[in-house]
Image (tube, rainbow, N blue to C red; front, side, top):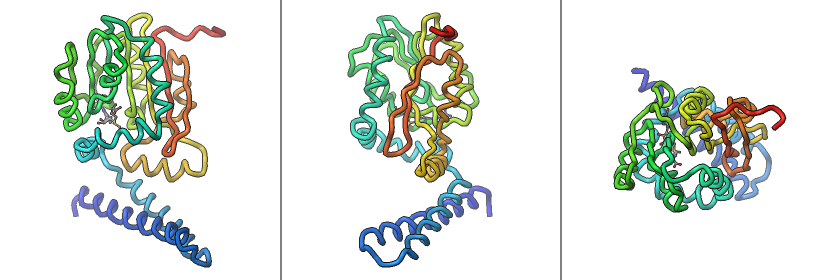
Length: 266
Ligand SMILES: C[S@@+](CC[C@H](N)C(=O)[O-])C[C@H]1O[C@@H](n2cnc3c(N)ncnc32)[C@H](O)[C@@H]1O
């Protein structure tokens, strides 16, 4: 069988184990079945399912090809409900960095949600460039926002391709850095494209330490998202601040990075 056929088979087996395991656990909880045998079996099956799925992660481009048609309909679930406070905290440094004429770069722009936020907040800017790996997500962004003056969307793989030269006054990114195995390298490249006084304002999902971190880490890796480790983010050059917000899924962070090196003791 081909390599991609092998991966599909591993995904299918993992999905079946995970689903059956979760059903056993949920069934026991729902019917208060006596004995713990079914629950332990369910936990073991779910763990095996996650381990299998971990071996055959989905490539982000394939994932977002499937997700693109429903992304904007689903995203209010996490934007307006699950992570509303964290997203409000993301708005504040963006609004203070934006001014008329500001050049903005958006890493992993998807269907253009961050640009929509600028418009909803009435935040002034000069030019906006959104880059993303997924042609399907970019097509949605163009269709919705292509008419906004001085706006463009470009296909770019943050893992392998050079960022646009800039310079930029603000680099933003939301829900994208967790997809990268080396987010620090992209952050450093983006920072090198800032004008003096410029800022990176980043929103991303974090790896955790709690009991639920293990299944979440594996589930997210299945969707090609290895998550960002907070201690690593705090060492990114130009690091200014990071606020962590608890989530139903992974915790999230709002972080800011400055063009200038941090001044010790400031
Ligand atoms: C959860 S969506 C977030 C989109 C948008 N920023 C938002 O706030 O709705 C994650 C986006 O990251 C993009 N992405 C994932 N890996 C990428 C990579 N290596 N290079 C560029 N974009 C990537 C995906 O295509 C997807 O559009």
